[in-house]
Image 1: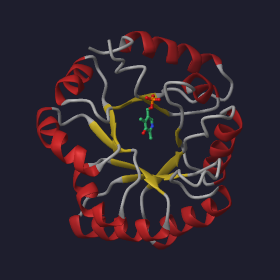
Image 2 (image 1 turned 180 degrees about the horizontal axis):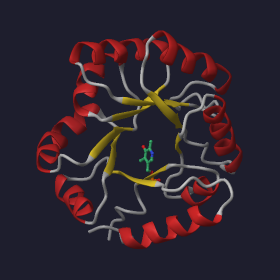
Image 3 (image 1 turned 90 degrees about the vertical axis):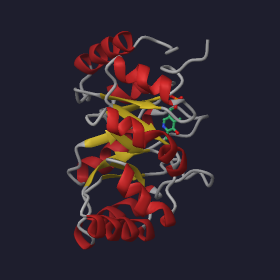
Image 4 (image 1 turned 180 degrees about the vertical axis):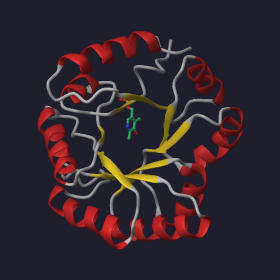
Length: 218
Ligand SMILES: *Cc1c(COP(=O)(O)O)cnc(C)c1O
């Protein structure tokens, strides 16, 4: 059911991560499992995947309460755009939110964490290509948002996340994400998907989000 074997993918990632100057091993392999049924996710867990990403709160609410009970060690990441009115549910269900991209959402997350007593690590999503259809704060507004989240709201911001435009070479976008993380002392960099994870790892990714390469249809 799974596409490439996970061992195979891990071996390749380790090799790249150990041979590139900017690489930052160990690199987390996050399985982007939108649209995948519980049975396929169970198979990925059995093969040793510990991190999963969902794009929609509602889909995650349908799949994950049971999975979490069975596999308490697995970490669930929100990797899709998050609506402000879904923050209470998101804080309840996710361990990591990778798509924090605006002050209003930051305020709602801070409130939800305060009220639930749950601390959920956050990545700031940056729209390096300034694509109107894509989520993420624009690069020139990222510094102010990061400072607001950390200093004013005391949110646990741990890293930067981004998705380069489809039609452009990804390396300059990864470099920009990395430079934003570096100047804020943020150690986590979520960048790289099935098409470009090799480049992303060479440029310092600490978390690659892999969908199609793991869950290929046969
Ligand atoms: C679906 C998705 C991925 C995985 O994409 P693939 O190209 O299938 O590897 C990664 N990140 C996000 C935010 C996604 O929505």
